[in-house]
Amino acid sequence: MQDFKRFPVICSVGGINSAGRSSFDFSYKRLVLDKLDASAKKFLLKDLSSLTNSEISSEKDILKKTLVRTINSDLFDPELLMKDIMNVNAAGQLPEGIDLSKMYNSRQHPKGIQMTIFGVTDCLKNLGKDWDSELKPLLDPKRIGVFSGPAIGQLDFEGMGGLLQSRKIGKRASSKHLSMSLIGMSADFINAYVLGSLGKTGTVAGACATFLYNLDLALKGIKNNELDFSIVGSAEAPINPEITDGFLATTGIADDKKILEMQNRNSDDNFEKVDHKNACRPFGDNAGMILGEAAQFVAVTTLEFALENGLNILGGFTDVAINADGFKKSISSPGIGNYLTMAQSLSNTLKIGCSIENSIVIAHGTGTFQNRSTESDVLNRVAEGFDLRGWKVTALKGMLGHTMGPAAGDELITAIGIWNHGLIPGINTTKKLADDVLTDNLDFCLKTKEVDKETVNVIYLNAKGFGGNNGSCGIVSPGFIKSKIDKQKLKSYETKLSLTEEKRNIYFEESVNGKYELIYRFNEEILNPSKDMKISKDKISISNYKDIDL
Figure 1 (cartoon, rainbow, N blue to C red):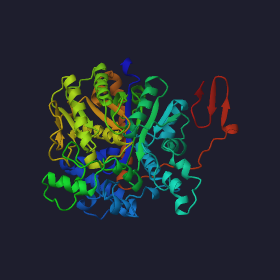
Figure 2: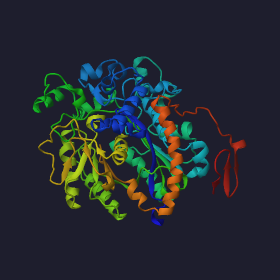
Figure 3: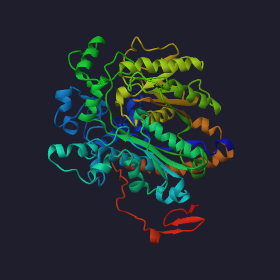
Figure 4: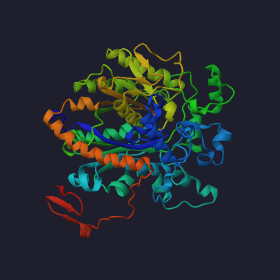
C-alpha cells in the first residue's frame, strides 16, 4: 500500500462535447445508445432535453441534434464561407440548442472560455464535495495545480479572430481581444474565477495531444510530491472558416465532394445525397477528418487523499508517455514517436503489476487516409511486441469529430464509461475496415461490444498531433487500484464514499432538470495583500486559505 499512497487517481470528470455532458457518463451513454437499458436511456434523453431546451421534442428530434451532423451555418458560418466556398458542411457541434453564454455572465468570452467554465463547473459539482468548504481548507494552496488550454487557441471573433480582423473590417480591437486569445487563458480563468487557486498553473500545447501534455504536468507534480490536487483539461472551439480553411489546405478534412466519392466507393444505400452524420470513418475507406468542439476536465489527486476524504476513484494513471518523431518528411506526416509512446505505456502498466491481457485501446482514429494505415501499424507492432492477440481497438472521432486539444479527454471519459457499464463504443460510422489497415494482432470494434469490465485492468489512450506531438497513456481500473488497498482501510473509505455519493445524487437531480448554476466569480473575494496576508520566515498566512508552509 505504501508504494501506492501517491498514486494519481481520477476523482471526478466534467465537460461537454457533441454527445452531451461528461458527468454521470452522459456523453459516453450517447455513444452506446443501442445497448442502453430503458432506465439509462430515459435519463440520457432527459439530460439532453434539459441541456438543449427541448423538453417537448421527440426522442428522434433530440438525438439528431447530437454527434457529427450538418453544420448550423447561422451559428458557425453566417457568411457561408464553409458552405458555399469550401464545401465543408459536417462537424461535431455541441448538442443543438445550447447557449453557454446565457448560463453565466459571460462578458463576451470566446466560446472556448465559455466551455471551460461549463466543463470545470461540471467537474467540481461531480466531485460530491464542496470545493470551498470541504476540500480547499485541507489543501496547501501551493500544492494545487491547474493545467488547461487548447491546441490552437481562442480563434473566434471574441478572441484572436477579432484581434486579427477588426481593422480590416473597419472596427477597433477591444481591450479584451489580445488577452482572450492566449492559449493559457483557459487555466487562468479556472484559477481566477472558479477555484480561486494560488497554486501551480500552466498550459502545454501539444497539437492534438494537448490534453495528455497537460495531464503529464499534473502527474509529474503529484509523483514528485509537489502537488496534491489538480484540475486538468482542455477546451477547443475550432469550427470556424479560418481553421476549416487551414485543414482544407492540408487535404486532411472531408468536404462534400470527398464524402460523396467515399459513399460511392463504399456502395452506400444513398450515394447521391451527402450523409454528413457518417462523414468520418476511422480505419475505413474514408474521406478525411471532421472538426468537433469539446471541453473535457478531470480532477486528479493522490490515492491517499481520495481515501481519507471519501472521493471517487474512477481510475488511475501510471505515466503519460510523450515522444517526438525525429526527422520528418513533412510537419503533418506521422513518424516513429507513436511507437515509442504506446510501447512505454504498456511497459509502465506492467511495472506496477497490472495485467494487460484484456486491455483496450481508444485510438486517435482521425478518419484520414494516412492515419488508418500508420496508426494501425503502430498498434499492431506494439501488440506483437507485447505478445497480445486480438487487442481490442475502438475510436471516437467518427461520432464526436476531431476536437483537437480535448481529443484525449474524450477518450478518457469514454474509458471511465467502459468500466462503469461494460460497453466498448463501436466505430459505428465505419462499416468495413480499409484494405491497408493492419489487423494481425488487433480486433477493431466496429459495433458496440460488451466486455467483462472486471477483467479489463487497463485502457490505453492514444493521441497524435501535427509536428510530431505523440502522447499515450494507460489508465488503470478502479478495481485494480482498490486491490492495492488494505481491507480495513477500504471499508472505512466506502463508508465515507457513501456520503460523497449522496451529494453527487443531488447534483444529478438538479442537473438533469437543467439547473447547472455555473461557477463564475468575477470580482469576488479579491485578496488585499495589506489586510489579507501575513508573511513570516516560516509561513505565509492568507485569509480563507490554509497556511502556506515555507
